[in-house]
Length: 313
Image (cartoon, rainbow, N blue to C red; front, side, top):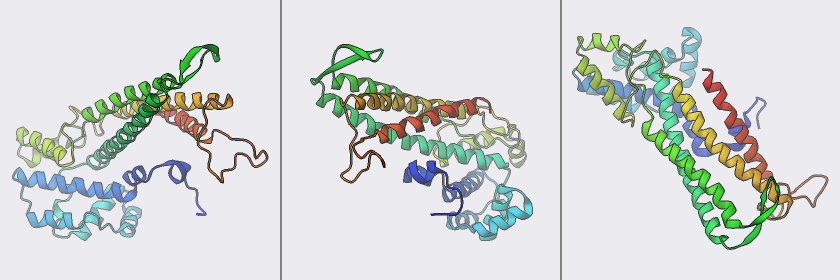
């Protein structure tokens, strides 16, 4: 319990895996991973960086003095600079080459893209699990007859498995979109303050070939096979809209399935699991509310709504 507000999306509904991806530890250790990747690539391409400096950075990647960083941010009023100073304090030999040629968005944007990719891989894994469960349900009940509905009015016969196959198909479509997005998601890379790579060109004496190599090397070290073609200070927010759209598609499929279950529970055609000690209502003990499906629908509406915010960014 806490005397401060905690968001229910974290405290009640997020998985341990997703919470870890978006935790402070992951965020700021990824900032340090980017500084390590940048220094490593710059050294490989000929800048005067010593291996002992990189080794010192690697040794301190996860040893973050958050109290010192907080003090520095209060003083400097800049989140990235506060962590540059904090990392430099932990790695004094490496301090002169941390963030060499970079801008703040090299750290913040590339970190968010890394977190997005990890999150999509987690979504992909869970989506495959949902598809497998539904596939088994479809096969198990493919011959069990049930009344079909159109306009929610009694229509022709169908089967329980056939009805579930509609839910299954939607999630398969969603999986294809997730697979495609993971494959195509670009890294921001090393683009400089306004996307011209001017600071890196200065470091490499206007050798544009080496700057392109730097961009590709840093991306590869961070697990990306491609970088965005052009950027301003930030990567294009069209990418955020694309991600929200794919997540919205999954939420739409989940909402359709859960809403069908809620309607069918009223007819006692299907039921959610009901625990031995579960309470359906504080006033009506006989009730068996579709609590799981209701939560799915409410969370789905929230996810679907996020695309509008991304569209205006």
